[in-house]
Amino acid sequence: MASSFSSSMRGGRGRKFKSEINVVPYIDVMLVLLIIFMVMPSATDPSIVDLPNAEKSTKPPSDYVQIVIKPNGALSIGVKGKGEDAPETAPNRDALVKKLRTLHESHPDYPVLIAGDKESKYDDVIQLISEAKKMGINRVGLSTK
Image (cartoon, rainbow, N blue to C red):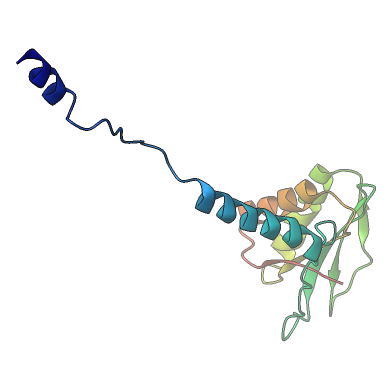
């Protein structure tokens, strides 16, 4: 009786279940992904970046205040159009802002165009836009070449 009890506790049959994952399909998928990621970088050259060109506006203003920023940090300001003045150089940004304020008071309806060289600092251009907006000049634009 003891022998029949012990055989029924073992489950009768001596078969064990294996709980393994079949990894062959996962290996196939990984190899396909590896091939895709190896081929894609050779199709595009990451060192070449095509920047968009700005298109000209339909009708540029006839009279405006122009600020020119050169790569070495030199600043000049002048009025372009009917009452064209020779552009004046400014030793620093504070002097340029003062001159911009006087030009805005004498010509309140003139927009401001900032012509920054592509080698000039981005921060300088943004600071000038900010100063012009603080003065109440609503029409501030960037001049492109």
